[in-house]
Amino acid sequence: MPSLKQTMADNGFESNENYNYVLTALAHSDAGSIPCLNIEGDGGRRKTAFANALAHAQEHVDYIFYHDFSVEETAPPPPSLHSEDEPGGKHVPPVSALDKVLSDACAYSEADTTILILDQLQAADFKDQIRLYRFLVSREWHFPGSSYEANPRKLTVYIISEEPVYHSLQKHSYKVWVDSVSDKQVPYTPADFKLADDIAPVMAGLAALFDRLAVTPTFSEYKKILEAIPHYVHTAEHLSNTVYGWTEGIDRQLLNSSAITDLIQEDIMPAIERYLGVEDVVELTAPPYPADQPKQDSIP
Image (cartoon, rainbow, N blue to C red; front, side, top):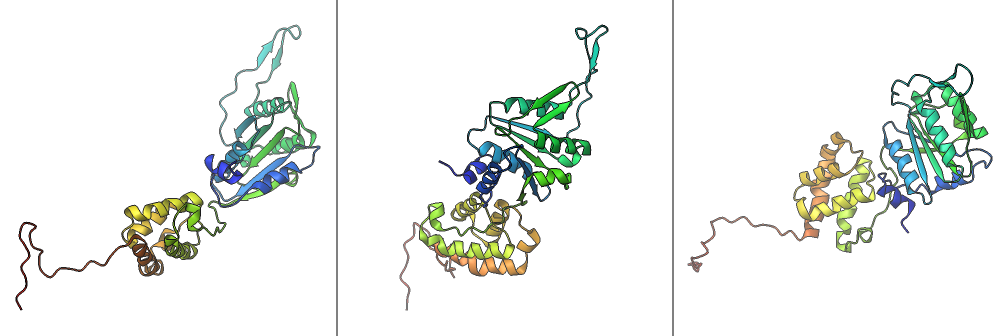
């Protein structure tokens, strides 16, 4: 069975970090309220990718709902008129996108395992953050004319915000930090990539390069670099462009610095040439004989 890390990679989020501990923490949260994961981290949509991948990577998850507070809602329809309620009818206010997704998540959680992802919470009205906190504690979502109850054993909420969330909501949530790039060091070996040990010196040189660049390639990034070496990495510039091309988080200015260029040229390229069996080419002082002309013995 694939690991959680591998399954998350298959769903669009690759990292050297193993996030099993997040699921364990959520599983042991307060049984009387709805578990909530607060996904923090560097700016950008990597947190969204993490939430989506984590939700889809879990077994036995039946429904995943998503709401983005930064997406402007279209103009709501006019209030509907229920003539059957009372003489003259009664106006029913339109249901907002937030109320719709919360009510759906509650309804499905009655019998099915459900995950609700609430993204870009910094764009929400502060009153909605308070409503969310009360919902997590009470398990009930209210809006004019309706009320829904969630099953805390079936529903989990993920929240994502670029700014600190309402304090009580924060205290109720389990936090996980997601970096803009993977930063956990992994001691890869040739066997990890199904390669022979003769590539070990090349990998040792690459490890020194990654350390100097302060980056930690993921498995697929490293694999692409190693696969490129025998095909089109023939010079130091080729290797520099390959490493930059496949690895997230590289400082281009640092990569082009003389210290890094010297490391690639003097240490890594010779290891690559030995690995590929590149022989020294002797420059001829005279043009070779044509193929159809036999070579003459030299006269002493």
